[in-house]
Image 1 (cartoon, rainbow, N blue to C red):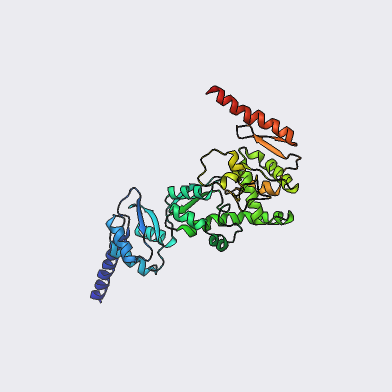
Image 2: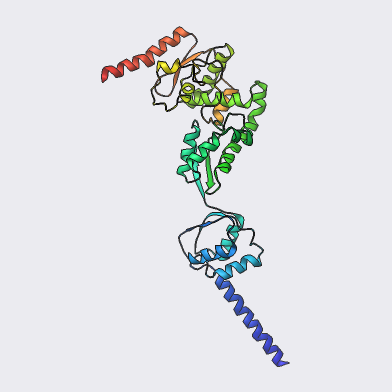
Length: 337
């Protein structure tokens, strides 16, 4: 019986040695290492991923990594995407990240008041979308219908926020993420909008005008109050930003001819009521300002040229303010040239 015990002992030693060898093969190649970016294509096999990891020095042995994935039943659970791995991570840790889809993300900030094209520029700069493709998708009326918003396109519904997104999502999914953020906020506002007898399109459109007219955040409710007063009295909005939105290749100089152009559907110096759709992407504060405007008798406002405005109740008072803050300023600039 001694030979049986001896044989068992040898087998046990071999098993331990073999296990230690496997553990070593699956251990981190180095104690400390800088991150290495790895892109896992859609549909890539575990073997292909393992070979790529080995070639980059991130795992010791591709076959051992592939065996581990098969043994754990993870061969069909690896997520595509961009990852940051270190050679100081074990094969088990890397596999866990791949199965959990802990992809690398990029931060992009979308402030209030950007247009579709400006949103696309920021997303493209972060490497998240192709700018032209995003604009085409956002400007397609079918996209607005598919994503459940009321605009003629996605203008107004690409919610301003700071996002962390992975590359490779594609334009439709990135747009869906931004619109989903808007819809989350809208859920908190929908009851108030219904009580004011305003639908989603009207709220977002007016909020976009308030956003573009406002340089001082605290003025949003007052400017919204002015616009509500004008709409209630049947007055035109007479908003420069809406008119500018409808001018192709606007060069920064708003002229009398622009203000008298009746063919511009966004020219609120000519059209009644709201423009056909949002002119920018408003934030939550502007949306709330439209639904909770300041109760005021003001009907006019003019810029002080510092981001703030002076408000007035009558046209004569407004004309005096325009002369003081606009025409006088222009005369002063000309005299100093």
